[in-house]
Length: 182
Ligand SMILES: O=P(O)(O)OC[C@H]1O[C@H](OP(=O)(O)OP(=O)(O)O)[C@H](O)[C@@H]1O
Ligand code: HPA
Ligand SMILES: [Mg+2]
Image 1 (tube, rainbow, N blue to C red):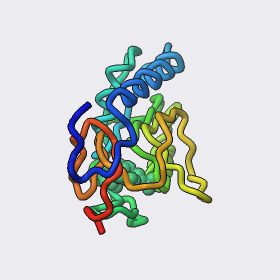
Image 2: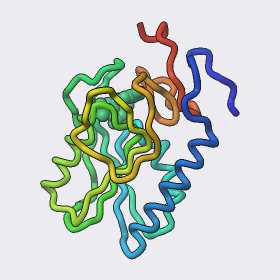
Image 3: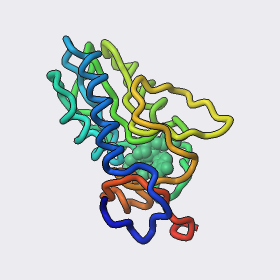
Image 4: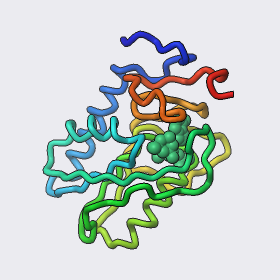
């Protein structure tokens, strides 16, 4: 277990727990895409760590492309507006698209991307979310096809997830001490 960063209140997912999640998601995807050649779309920046691990657990032929969007900026709350920073380079018409996302929180980012991609006429479109935040009395507009784990309704960092671009490099997921952002 890596040494705990001084800004982390507590660990939510250890490195070992993350490994188990990746192995399970890989098994599910390998089963469901056995005769397919999916295009994995990593949603940058947050999903780059998760996607790199997930790709190595996927044994079927697959390709990867990157879509960079941003809605949180340097804060802990969504701005409510999803900004495209970088679009895909791949034409997705007729492709089996699998979106790899680090976290589904308000659901705004994923519902925006699904709507955008649907207009490009892929053969299928599915979502693999590493973490889904359990927000009381909130029903997200999208339901992922593959869910790594559920996380509590707190701002978390690590394993690709940032606060103001920091902490993405932590190998575990943890809750940030509130004094860091308040
Ligand atoms: O469900 P939502 O409320 O839309 O939140 C989830 C999105 O927010 C984060 O991205 P962010 O905008 O912080 O960009 P980043 O990936 O570059 O950190 C995260 O990586 C997801 O993409
Ligand atoms: O809890 C979170 N942490 C980091 N980035 C995020 N983007 C949405 N929710 C979160
Ligand atoms: Mg972010």
